[in-house]
Image 1: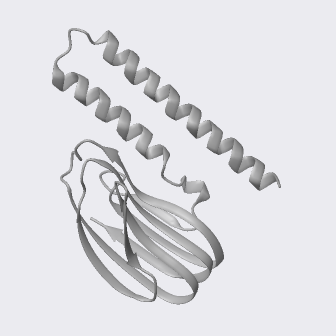
Image 2: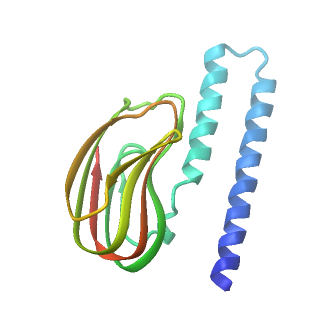
Image 3: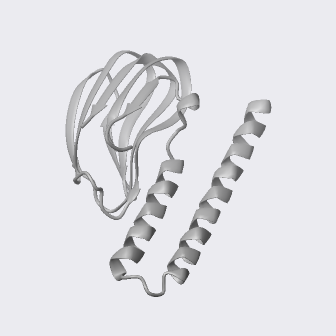
Length: 166
C-alpha cells in the first residue's frame, strides 16, 4: 500500500514538474521578443531535453547499475533480475536534434532467462522489440526528433541483462 501511494505521489510530482517546465519555456520565449529564431529553438530544445529526462527511471529505482555516456541516449546497464515484474526506462530522451549525432549502436546480452521479458525501443510512437529471450543482439538506430527510449518490461522474470549503447 505504501509503495502504491509513494508511486502515485512521485507520478504527480513528475507531472507538476513537466507543467512547470512548459510554463517556464512559454515565459522564456515570451520574454525573448528580440531573440533570434535559433535562440528560441535552442530554449525549446533544452526544455524538451529536461522533460524527456524526467521519463527515465531514476537510478534509485533501477534494479541494476546504469552509467550514462556523453548523454542519456548512451551508456551501459547491467542487471540481474530475480522474479521481477515491472518496467524500466533505461536510456533515451526527447530532443529536436541530438547534439552528439543521431546514430546509436546497441549491444544486448541476455542470459539465464526464466519468465517473460521484452527489451524494446520506443521511437516516437513506434515500438520496436529488440529481444525477448537469451542471446546476443546488435542494432543500429537513427534517433529522430521527438521521444526515443530504450525500455525493459518483465513479468516474473529472472535473468541477467547487459546493455551497451554507443
